[in-house]
Image 1 (cartoon, rainbow, N blue to C red):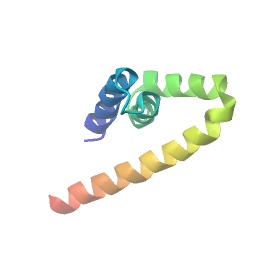
Image 2 (spheres, rainbow, N blue to C red):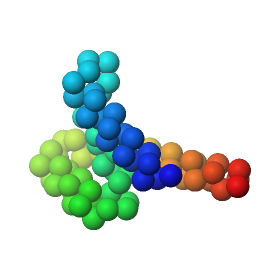
Image 3 (cartoon, rainbow, N blue to C red):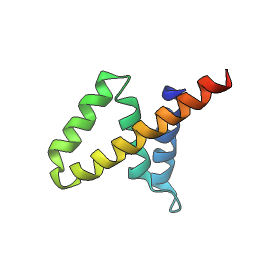
Length: 82
């Protein structure tokens, strides 16, 4: 479920790079943050982006916290329904 949501955000982010109604970079970062819990390459990429764009690091931390809460809530709901 976590991998599916992470890849969904990545696909939406790629679409958002070409469509004006979606925030492509935002969706890509959320997807990478979610995937960084499962994949080492995604974790390294998020860390490189944090180092390169230090002003955005606070936003990454906030997005990471939101992603953590969302995945926790989603997995808790999934386990309650099972």
